[in-house]
Length: 229
Picture 1 (tube, helix red, strand yellow):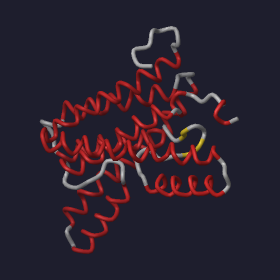
Picture 2 (tube, rainbow, N blue to C red; picture 1 turned 90 degrees about the vertical axis):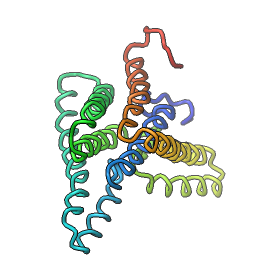
Picture 3 (cartoon, rainbow, N blue to C red; picture 1 turned 120 degrees about the vertical axis):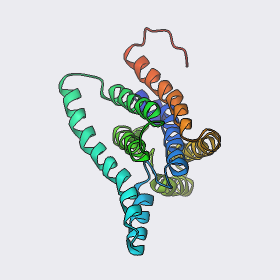
Picture 4 (cartoon, rainbow, N blue to C red; picture 1 turned 135 degrees about the vertical axis):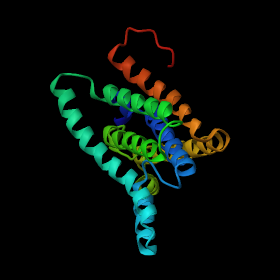
């Protein structure tokens, strides 16, 4: 029965894998070009903060606190903005995706002229908006920025489905495996572009974001001819 259930497009596998590709790309980009910091994987930033604190290197502590701070700020922003958008009757997921695109575009334009800290802050802010906005895959929770829970769920759901002969659980485990693979592909692509283009590699993020915006727009405007089916 669950296969027949119709889900919103932002819960579909295609959009989820593209979003996770964006996360993989974004985290690898900031790790390579922004001093080993992560835009979305705050566990890595927290570990590095504590590590440099233990060494007494307070300059590095400050560097790693920046993405953490802006990620937290993104949560405040997302909560407040979502309430306002829904109150006004706007389509939240499309609006959130559009805001992510605008912030990435700002980062692309400003990066050659501003401190690394500003670029890092903007991209951590974007990652925070994404992780809070897009949380469901076919009705089930998943993470599109951090992979620890996804690795656990893939193993648990698939194994439980195999033991209990439940194909729906096996399918859910397989779907989350696709999420992990798309994250890895994002990291690979980002690594290649970041090593080749440096900070200018952030411009590549605009292409998958454009796809996500387009898919979310189509959901609210089904009569418009689709470019990507």
